[in-house]
Image (cartoon, rainbow, N blue to C red; front, side, top):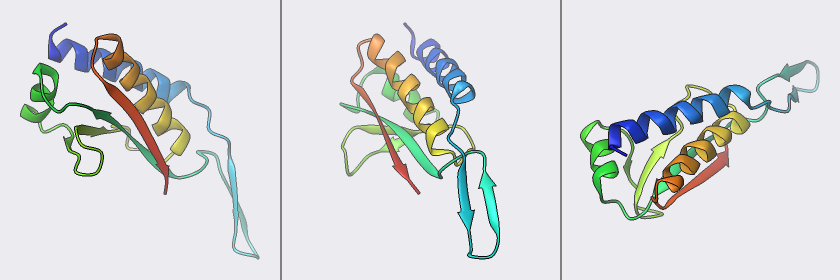
Amino acid sequence: MEPVELFYQATSKADQAFKEAIPEPMTVTDGTNTWKIDEGMCGFASVNIRPARGKFVKFLKDHSIGSPDSYLGGYTVYARTGSQSYERNTAWAQAFAAVLNSEGLNATSHSRLD
């Protein structure tokens, strides 16, 4: 599959997973007031591709998508969601990585609470 097709397929599946994810609401209090946060915990997610070479990584670099990862090695793409929902971003990254893996790339999803 050509890199542009792979990117759009991975992004499409990831966007669908993001929309279908149902975060567990979070309750926050300051001791006096209480707020319900429907999007759940805050966090972010990414997909790491190792090694950082090949047609697909070149496509990402050429389009300024992602960056080299000095900690994990390889090349990392952050969830492209505009959301702070940990669960939704994690779903996005897992789906994106699954599509890449199905095409023979070594991709892993990573997520962290903020």
